[in-house]
Image (cartoon, rainbow, N blue to C red; front, side, top):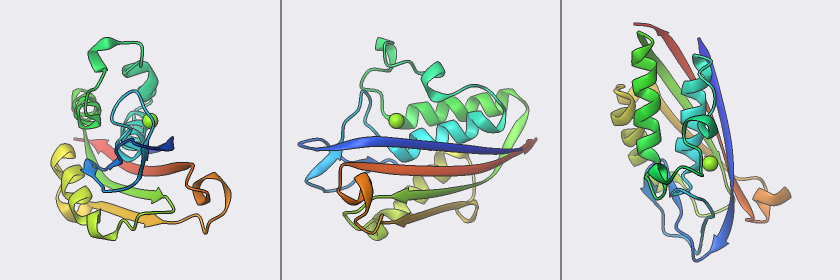
Length: 156
Ligand code: MG
């Protein structure tokens, strides 16, 4: 089964920028109820999507104080546990970040390692890619950041 996830968060001054579990030095960070890790949020939706288990908003409502301030890695861990509960395993994960700045290259490897560890996958089954929006649209104006994630899940 294939799962797809997408997320977007607004960017604002004075917020932290956490992507793929890595805190990235940046004058702009994501505005969010949680740590605003768009990559992990898209990853959760991809994992849930592969098994038609709903979406991140259903599992982690922002009205639930249980998840307030929770690192998004906790959402990923929960989604991975749901995949295992369904007697399935993750085959691979492919992520694309779209943001104008800063450059993501120095952080990609750590993001891959974080995802591989959380999803119990070898590093070579986790791809992290990044691109800009060529200064076009709200991502290009640094008003927001996008993440897209696709994954394959199979019966264990
Ligand atoms: Mg989100």
